[in-house]
Amino acid sequence: AIGTSHGAYKFKKKPTGEVLKISLIEEIHRRLPDTHLVMHGSSSVPQELQDVINQHGGALKPTYGVPVEEIQKGIQHGVRKINVDTDNRLAITGAIRKVFQENPEEFDLRKYLTPAREAMAEVCKARMIAFGQAGQADKIKVKSLREMVTFYGG
Image (cartoon, rainbow, N blue to C red):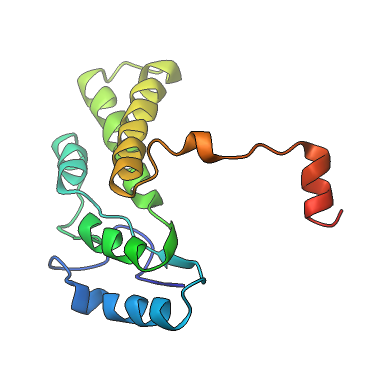
């Protein structure tokens, strides 16, 4: 596993492959080509999601996450799990803040959780496309619960 810190505050300026040590990922992949790597703390912390929060009462300090193009380089060299939850949290928080600022009397969670889920779904969709996951569902071989128990030694 490799990566940065979890959360939104990773870098004060846009990081490069040198800061992220993409060369280390390449070297690990060269030496151990069948090893799947994990990138921790790899949310990209998009400026547009920060802006939505700050435009609706938030006070996020300027910050940068891991650029999607750097994650894509990692994927080319064995990264198979990418932790990007902060991007989802930013999308959810921005959507909820927007609803509450525009409708301060609102209390029905369906009115703010629906746009929050939609905002998160857009982030997930964008990441699945960027990371090459889109269109892969037909390659998943479904196993029964019994098969899973046998597979995992239960």
